[in-house]
Image (tube, rainbow, N blue to C red; front, side, top):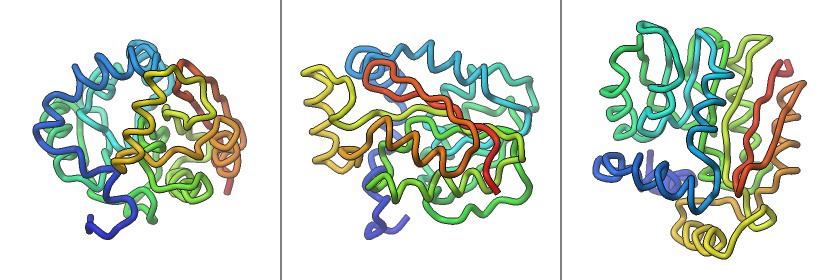
Amino acid sequence: MERDDPAYRGQSEYTPFFLRIYDPVILGFFTRVVWRCPTPLLVERYRRHIRPRHLDVGPGTGYFLERAGLPAGSPVTILDPNVNVLDHASRRLQRLDLTAVEADVCKPLPLAGTFDSAALHGVIHCLPGPLSRKAVAVANVAAVLAPTGVLFGASILGPSGPHTWLSRKMLDANNRRGIFDNLGDTQEGLGEILGASFEHVELETVGSMAIFAATNPRT
């Protein structure tokens, strides 16, 4: 991804070193303590919604895919603009029939065929805002899902969400650094952009995170 791309800063922190410490630091501490959303709950949602032909947008370290309960050899496509992420997750998920695609979810996806499920987990709060702009990413994923497909994931809410003093400090810091761009992200707004591309939307807030599942993409 070019440095002048609006989405560049949201993915630029994912260096090989950061990916090595991501699980204990981000999932072990920040998700549980700062954002107050237990990582085991997020794993359970993966296991609940994932289906045989799966697309994972922004797979991170592959932590959730590794624990999603898929049988060995299951076909999974991972998509990310950062080759460090794709390389790290590919090494971790060798038991799966993995296809890695370097692409930006905010642009039309270079994918053939359709998928039964897709994840946008921890991605939306990193995409360039406002939410109306992030709606393009949701629509792009919906466009490659089967008629009964499901999109699921979680995203950290902006200041309107239920934050603590600590999470507000981290929210402000991450937005100043450009890692997040979610100061305008609300639960209601997230529901609206999901509803624009899907017929059925389930949305709940746990801590400072909105957890969602959207089914039946609109054609």
